[in-house]
Amino acid sequence: METLSKALNIIDCAATPDVRGRWTMTPLRGRRRLPRRVKVLLCLGLALALVLAIGGFVLYRVAQHNFHVVSEGLVYRSAQLDAESLAQMVQNHGIKSILNLRGADTANWYNVETNAAQHLGLKHYDFALLAGTELKDEEMDQILAVMGSAPKPLLIHCKSGADRSALAGALYLYGLEGKPAETAGRQLTVFCGHVPFLFWRDTIAMDRSFWRFVANHAQSSGQIPAKFGAALTQPDGTLLSANHAGE
Image 1 (spheres, rainbow, N blue to C red):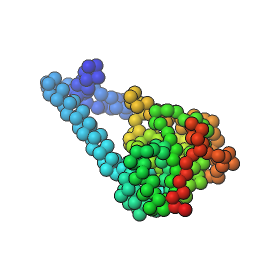
Image 2: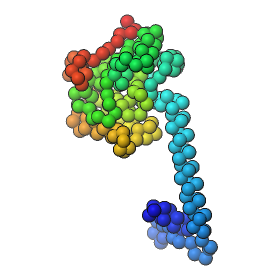
Image 3: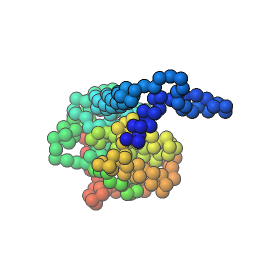
């Protein structure tokens, strides 16, 4: 109610400069103020317009499979793709390998993806992440190792392409291309669907993982550190799966 009251008061104000040239909101004088009912309707209309704009943006991203360039010609990220969409990505961007951050699965989407990868001659990697669980530094090292050695261009994906894929993109830019942390961290953005403060999702774990990695790791010069060549294991201790579908 307090926020609504402030919004209603702003409608009856105008932006005017003070003697120092700074703009401030001052009440309108000499004019008839809008009735409260009209102001409420204006506020509701603006709120509805905002919701529709956000909804339209989300629908657009869904239609585009939340596809984004991480590093032009080298690394891309997206949501889960069907076989037809994957084939289109291969045709448009020359994709040669896939890093699936949902992990190996018995579900139909996984069978569709691995069969399509084999048909298209793509190398396929699985790494199981949870968007609401922070990663250990060792796990992020393993992801960097895969991204560094995978044939390029590489497509990274999770389910929605918003959280886990964003973290992987940020790690790639910071850990392998040596981009500044602030630049790499922009992969974790609301404009790609990453909303870290939704309490029922807790995807801020991806942000915390990235910034902890930044705090604990000096940037590489683009070469994969020797430790990244160690045996790759999943968080549960099993070996990381790499399906050499293209070989």
